[in-house]
Image (cartoon, rainbow over all chains, first blue to last red):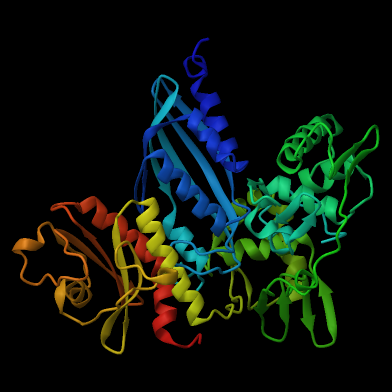
Length: 145
Length: 386
């Protein structure tokens, strides 16, 4: 039987990855990501699929209704860039901030490095300043008009 | 919330199902707060937000047949019947998570040609029923208060209802903490037909919020077709214990997700730096520190980072005289100060048994992380919340 990863398109891979995250089917990520996969975030590198899954669980706990909505994808032979937004209600601890019960909505962008139908690396550019401002209105980082 | 207006998973509104009490079913418990179904045997099935919302909708109509069209309208947020297969697919997936044998369901039934029925055979436990209602989000205005949770403005004895769109408009402006937002962007986010529709909505909303809608003090127009909100939500009361728990979760994130084996959080109180949370060898019960150390500003690499308000990266502690050995010896250390409102409120300290384990990229990343966490430190050492 042929390896399904060899026939799927980058667009399909990206769609399935976002769907799996939204549907909380984190074990399905095994079908799209190599175990040695690395996610480069603004707050540090997450090395390995297991740690990436731990990060997703942390996010689900902090934002039980979190939802990632893709807005645009740009494909190249071994790259895919997704522009998307992240939204959720902050009901659990998140990066040291206790639950604020606030609704958070941030813009983000990811550049994925893909080879032979598998995601090897992701560079994530999320609006962390916007996240910090929305998690706490008294945050010194909050924008003032 | 029975009778609530239709909400889609992407409409930006705080959803009532997230904060509802756990739902007891014959095969287990739906934990809405954590979006999961916990089987009686202990197995956990994660639920998507749409699945949780669908269960909440069915639970509000427990033991009754709910037409597929109602689910489509209220959970999916649209009434295009050509999409009703989406409901069938979602129910089928949900059944696989809930039922021991999806081919002979015991909880989620299909009533052929009619719809779906959720069997709820146990009333809520008293402790669940007594769960407090969601925290109220109160917006203080000149002579009135807007309750964004309940959706009305209280003005003397009067209660003026806010529409779902008006609540969304206020949430959108609150989200940016007083900054101006372009009308075009707001209209797009709220899926309005254009800026004209937004102007009409602002006009109607001012009549509800302002003492003199002609001279608004809160919902302000800004040159360039922008709007901003001059009002704040009452901050929720958070205890010192909750802030400490949040800092414990920060060390868990740094340790388990970012993969640093030894991480300690210090807070700066009464001119001393005190260890309050740890991941790794120094971790005690509940994430606290086994033997908490206290250091003065300028003492050790942690004290140095706090004193100079900048991260200190030590590639080899063997050649660093200012290195203070803790429970476990380390060969490299990265101490990152947490700065809020110009004050050092804490330090995030990482140690590693190998030399040169930390790089400038780690330093930059952790400065970003501590910027997000800074308000929690600030409130903890400020004391005003206790």
